[in-house]
Image 1 (cartoon, rainbow, N blue to C red):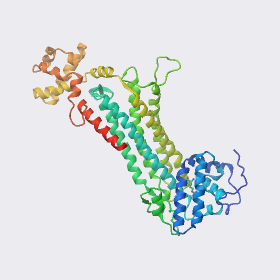
Image 2 (cartoon, helix red, strand yellow):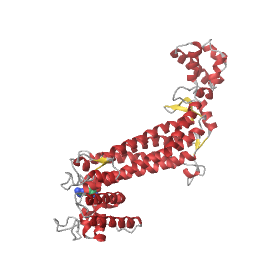
Image 3 (cartoon, rainbow, N blue to C red):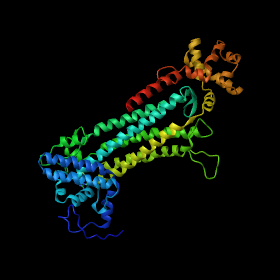
Image 4 (tube, rainbow, N blue to C red):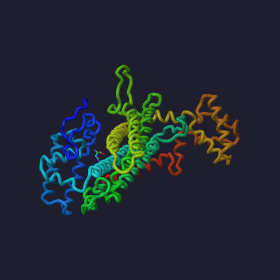
Length: 470
Ligand code: ARG
């Protein structure tokens, strides 16, 4: 890279400048490689703006027609990959305007009346983030559907429930999957909330103070699907909290995805062997032929780093910026695109993995019985049948577990006489609660793990998700 100038002054503000930028200046200043992704939004914004200018008699109907036609031609050029994006023209806004001038000549110069790149970029970017939120909601619903279907199929597949990653109490695989459906539904709602809040149009705020032209901001807002124009011109061009909210929702979603991904990594390990991912979502090892690695799950787990970093990136860029626009804000797009791209890939990969995975019911059930997972059921039986205070029942049960452990047997294999040595009032009826199936079937309290609950919840979610799709 050299520090020479190209000798050409900028065509957009050449009036005040006699020399073009140095090569390094161009390198640090240009954003076209990133913001060219905003071309659809930029053209939509310009079309709405020009139509409004004509309706308000700020430009002629003929000029508006020429602008609409020229922007239409640019659309097909970009779609056909025939558009020459130029770094010298800095960003998507100036690339499109310069091309418009080549196509239609003088009327192109009237498009920027009562507008600045500051309200233009704020508008384009809001439109992009709004769509990204919508897509995240759609992808989350697809993932919820995949989870719900698996949960329905595994409503009575007993598995160990964990706390501290130690065997705690039996649950079902379906119940475990539905826990994630709850999380992802809140994530989708967070995107929907953010989307509703950001749906105000910055267009017409101009550079920062509004304009003296008799523009109609309601008209451009409506044309672009916004609920209303932003009420304060300074806020309109300076705020990026809409992107921060989207990245916050993305970060929370990524955290949920990473927990599920971590569980897939654990469950597919031969030490657990609870699930098998399909070949489509596993990789082999170049040296160890026996391996089936859960690479996709590991990468989804890692994407949380990238997504949370994007949120931090933009928070740090925005922190302490005085009103109104500062060029720092140009960095908003790289961060947001990176975070939202990683999220959409992570959601797609997780949906694929869940849709294809096979649960190993016997391995899960076998594991569910290990680790004295029905000890709480024994204690509850003492409370219910002998009217023992729970604290005392906990103590008695602890002694029974210790004895079973010493004898190397499961709780339900501990002979009645042994139990009666600990608590003489225990009867053989106790064995009815000590199996893992009996344990999980008894968890019928609202929100509990009982298969009957899981079946009901899975059909409730299935109906809700299918209804939304239609
Ligand atoms: N490329 C710029 C951005 O993304 C557009 C706005 C530039 N505004 C300005 N006053 N230089 O932020």
